[in-house]
Amino acid sequence: MTPTLVRNLRDADPSAPADAGTRARDWAEIQERMLAPLYEAVYDRLEVGAATRMLSLGCGSGLALLIAAARGAQVTGVDSDRDRLALARARLLPEEGAEGVPAHRARLHESGLPSGAGADGAPYDLITVFEPIGCAAGDSEGLVPALEAALPLAARGATVVLTGWGPPERCATAPVLRVAARLTESARPPRPGGWRPTLRDDLEDVAARTGLRPDGSGRVSCPFGYADQESAVRGLLSTGLFDAAVRATDRSQVEKEVAEALHPYRRPDGTVWMPNVFRYLVCTT
Image 1 (cartoon, rainbow, N blue to C red):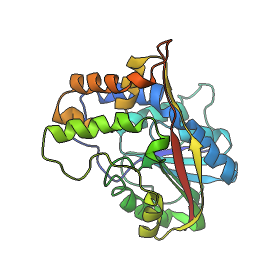
Image 2: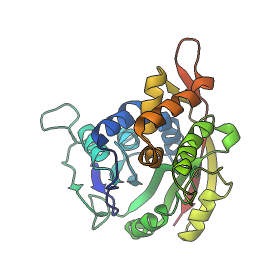
Image 3: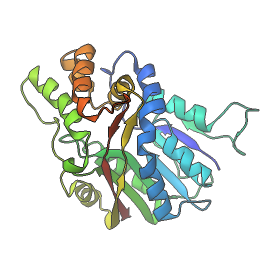
Image 4: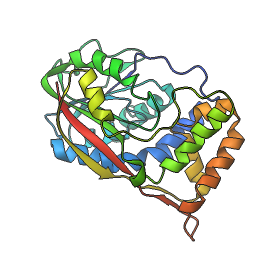
């Protein structure tokens, strides 16, 4: 295994919250694991293993990379969030002498995509995008150029996996996400980018715009479960989906209204449980 982590071509958002490091830890410790069933389902379907050379766009703090690496895959991660990427590095590239050190030291690129393919020089045979699209208008716009930049690093006939939110009626989190759009639009005239229902062909549209050929799809149950309401609020705000609402109002108001929206999903023991369905599209280059 030779994990490689690189930053994306896009610069980090200069208006990101000041507590970005704390938010990255909330993502890694609370929220990221909610999508683990999606990662596992994709890897099972594609039989990810020792022969796999994977490039993950938007790798976050590295959980999907870690799962793939545990299967023997050679992994490369790309993300625009420096704090999440630092956590991914700690997971995948421990200090010398620590348990689990890879057989070969990984490369870490601070900006841009790798200049070549995998660490062994071979092109990638799998590109994954585990940042789900479909909950905000235009949330796939940055994905198209990122894919176009990455595809030259893939082998001919390589597999590309795109992911998105499932139908709103199958996603209990959808009403909570609408809080972000409502608060944002209440502070300024409506403009493109607010919450919108997931469209059936969101993933197929991205595939068509990047010249990919769809070759199957699937749906995966990914319930969002939290120990308590505070953890749920912290986890959801760590996704970045509420950043515009925080800028338009203030964090305390967003936290208050998200907590109120979570009331229907609180259990008698104080835990929060929201069933969700996510969709993935398997494509070939």
